Image (cartoon, rainbow, N blue to C red; front, side):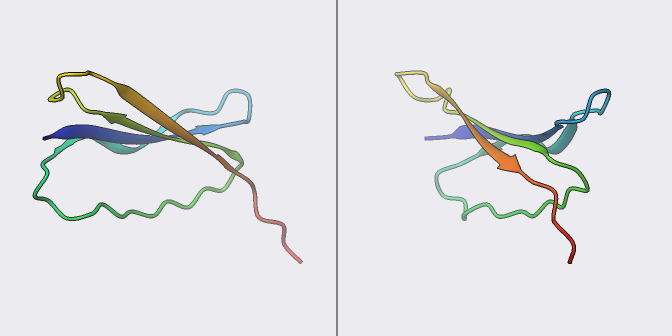
Length: 73
């Protein structure tokens, strides 16, 4: 089965722009695991979206992670 995934960062600050970390990509079942890194200068949410359109039961999942600004010591 194939699926499509994308990632974006949504800052908490008013007037900030959403950043597309990874554009939507189709991934086949035979492909290796996906890994990526992203560093943010502000707090916000990382949204990972997974869409398995090839499945008979079409489902879309979205995972949200809170990104906090690092505290310097």
